[in-house]
Length: 47
Image (tube, rainbow, N blue to C red):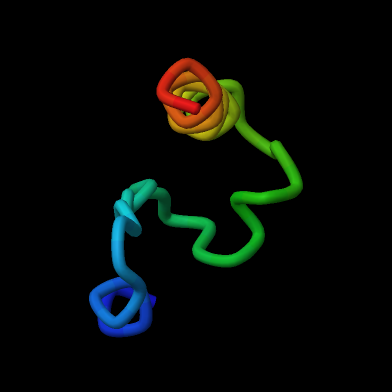
């Protein structure tokens, strides 16, 4: 995804670190949810 974001003008790649990989999006751990929520909040604040 980093390479894809590099091809999009103005894109900002953010990596969310988790041992759950793609399952992170299912909010199985509060720590993962907090990271994802922070990325969304920043993106919406910058919009």
